[in-house]
Structures are given as structure tokens and as C-alpha cells.
Amino acid sequence: MSIRQIVVPIRVIPEICSRGVLLCATQCPAPWRVPTKDDFINLDKAMGGTGDNRYGAFSQLPKYLGTGSNQWGGGYGGYVGSGSMIDQGSDVRYWSQTEGSSGYVSSLRLYSSGYIYPQNDDYKGYGFALRCVK
Image (cartoon, rainbow, N blue to C red; front, side, top):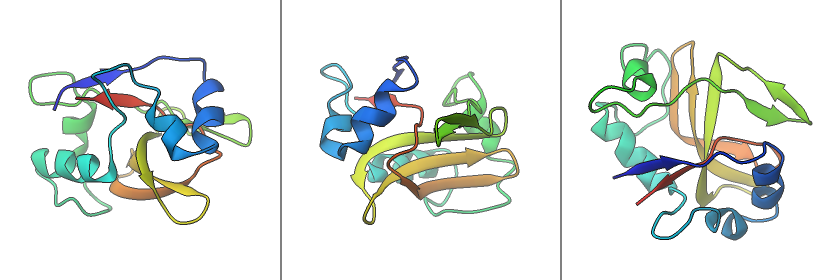
């Protein structure tokens, strides 16, 4: 799976994505697309994880955060909640195009205290990082 990161004004994507996952899914230029929940599960397995949400996964976090060969190149950029940046330097969440429960969307969450949640459910009104895959 190839990965491309889209950089847009921080308030644009949350507004688009909170209106509906289908609108969010159109934010990547062809042939790129917003990942699905299954993409995040498969990514986690490829990084040596189980595909399940877990805590205490300190040894696997560098694979997500590093920029070397076979690393994903993520970072703890935080997220937007209630109009403010939250947890910069310790937390990051990535949009998926998979609907969660009512008012929620599936996301990938990485947290510096050892969380790796490839099946996270987050409130659609928050703003997360967007990665495109093909």
C-alpha cells in the first residue's frame, strides 16, 4: 500500500468529514483514496501488530512513527476538538472512510503512552490527520 499525506487548512477537513464519510472519502486525488478501517487493521498486522486495539504497544510505535524502510512516517500532531488543538506531541488520529456508530467514524489512533488503536471510533466533529492510500 502506498501512502500520501494531504496537507490542508486544519478546519477544512473536519467540516467536510463531519458532514458525512462519503464527503470525506472524496478528499484524495485519484487514484488515491482515504483508507478504510480494514486498511488500518491490515497496516497494523503488517507492522507486526494483531489488528486489534491495544495498550502497552511501546515496541511497535516506532514502526508507525519512523521514516525509515518499512516504517509509516506518522507523528504526534494532535487533533482538533471543540475548536482547539489537543494533545500535540502525544496523540494522533487518522481519518478512515468507514462509518462507526452513530455520529462516529473509524480511525487509527496512536498515543505516546502505548496505545495503538487501528479500530478506534471517534466523534466525526473532531479534526484528524488525513492520509491517502492506493
